[in-house]
Length: 326
Image 1 (tube, rainbow, N blue to C red):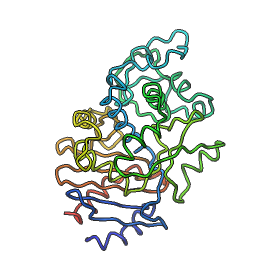
Image 2 (image 1 turned 30 degrees about the vertical axis):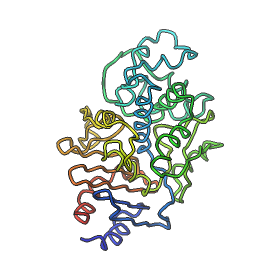
Image 3 (image 1 turned 90 degrees about the vertical axis):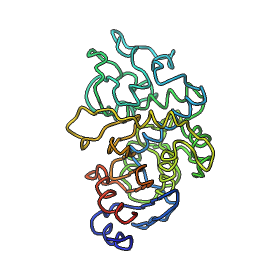
């Protein structure tokens, strides 16, 4: 298969793909759109949002706005009232949230309770901790990660989208993003499942804090810039955006004690695909991916509209796309 064959393959085998953009040796080698999307249209990149947030925390730490990932979560919220009898929450650090090893009460994400509350950060904090203590067990969560946006706000005085615009998006030439607010649960649902192109927006809570676990909308052309920044160890066009030390820590592989997640390991909100080759990715539901391959100096970004049966597109990238890019 060659690059010309990819169009037909996507239409037949991967019909919810909207855009693919690939760079090799720092230059664009593939850019293609489907489903009526244009190059600069955005899709909701789902959980790939998490990986962008990891970069924001690296930038905040580099700028001494946050001391380290070992800061206690509760220290950022002196006005939060800890529930009676809760002790574990006092030991949870930023690192636990970034590595998905924070302890929570109950199983799964409490979407309705958090998203129907007036304060999404405090509502998420209500689920942090529990009687089991600090188990250091991998527990993948999405909505409860809203605590990270609360921390960023408390530490920097900037809303999530404003911090991202100033310190990440603008330096990379990514269009300025705006908050998107859902007026109802139905509008929240439609934001997720809609197949139509979106603007440069970030889903936000009533306080204007962007959701860190999902909700960011980007084009593949901009997603690939994020990947290239990581591939180049935090440098973009000769300018340092985030420290090399942070990138290295962010993609340091940690075992995932689960039969799910296709045997991948985890860094700071990034999936480690092949630890031995240092290949890693930002992965969102429906096949939204930023794939970084330092060994071959290749970055691939795939954007897709909502299709719940698609977890990732690592196999598609490695088996179909990479042979065409070599």
